[in-house]
Each structure stands twice: as structure tokens, then as C-alpha cells.
Amino acid sequence: MIAVRATLPALPAAVFDVLADGWSYAGWVVGATHVRDVDEGWPAVGTRIHHCFGTWPFEVHDVTEVTAVDPPRLLELDARLAPFGTARVRFELTGSRTTTACMSEVVTGGAAGLLPRAAQALLLIPRNRETLARLGTLAAGRHRP
Image (cartoon, rainbow, N blue to C red; front, top):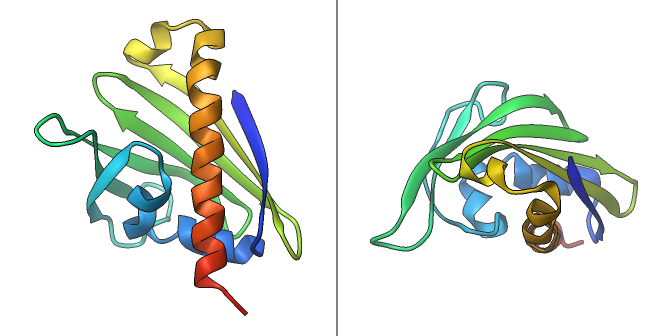
């Protein structure tokens, strides 16, 4: 898995609150442009976010499904973006006053899986750093003292 870490200026529970708000997905996931629907019960295992990537008229509609959850410390997702690829994405949150967030991702299928791991890392590391930065900003903004 390709992993990035960041210290986020919010409590782990506040960061997890953003992860648990499926409607906020397009606000922190780099590349996601629109959330079409969120399954009732998100983020329970098996629930999905129905999202879009890209811009009209070149939007790709797909879903991301929860595969594991342990609030407020862990969320694991099966992210799909057909035909480009699928990935397993894992968020691990630790800390007390701030959150150390580790976002790990591995491409599990599709065209992106044909790229060598080094090429995947060149694309995923900066994207996922920005994703964590956005996640931290949303969490800090929602939970100001």
C-alpha cells in the first residue's frame, strides 16, 4: 500500500465525523466533483457513496463502499472509478489533541493497476496529501472551540 501521513488540527473524533458524513465526500476527496447519493447508515460496512469524478460532460459515475469501520479510528473503503481502476483506501486516525492521519491506498484493478508501483506513487502521494489536508481543514472548521 502507498501511505501518506499528516498531522491534522482536530481531534480524531472530529476528523472521523467528516469521514462519516458521506455528503461531504466531494469536499475532501481530490477529484470527486459531486455526490449523487449516500446509502442510509453510512459508514456501516456495505454502505456506499454514489459519486462523480471529472467535469461535465466527461463525468464518471461510480461508487465507494465501506469494507471496514471502527469509529473514530478506522475507515476502509473500496473506491471504484471504472474503467480507470479500483482501490482499497484505509484511513487510520490516532492522537488526542490533534490527529495523526494515515491514508493508505492500493490499486486493486482496472487500467491504473497496469501502472508500475513507482508510477502509482507519483500520482497518489501528492493527491492523498491534498486529500488529508482538505479533510483536516473541514474537521477543524466544523469543530472550532
